[in-house]
Length: 203
Image (cartoon, rainbow, N blue to C red; front, side, top):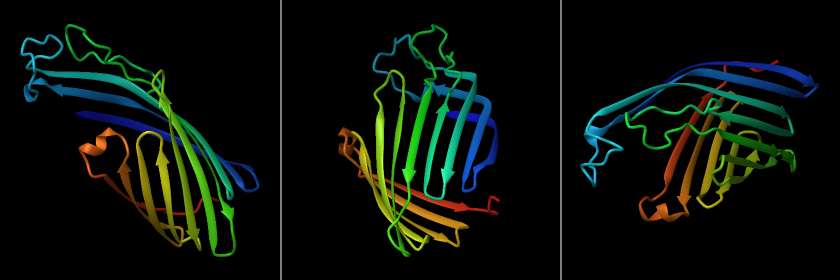
């Protein structure tokens, strides 16, 4: 299990007439807990994990920056900036280290006509030295209210997306992931539901 307590601060300001920049930082602590009594070991004498409960508290920090305009957006964020080692097992066997993750995203909103907009976007993500991964997405938006799209994640999945926005204040979205990797032998896809509410417009 994983439990965290985090404080987050964000600052948003105008850099041009229709362009704004947001900066965000979060810091906190995370608890990782492994209950060895609930795990059946192939080798009961395995020294890496015994029949006990292991707990580790570590500090954590995340940072992000997001530049956006009516027609485009670009953002960068990083998670687990501190890259702390988890001291879960007394023998000290294993790496048990939080790896720093990074995400780079960008998109452009192209107005086809007064009713329809096309929004291609992409996300580049990964953790060093692991392999990188791309998300390539396209949405078609009707009257800034209803949208549908498709997304492809390299080596992983294709997603079908739909959504609805009421007066740019209440948001609803749904996506269904169709697994392309070897995991498709063990699952039938992933459902995701999103709901959002904007309290007031940013001036």
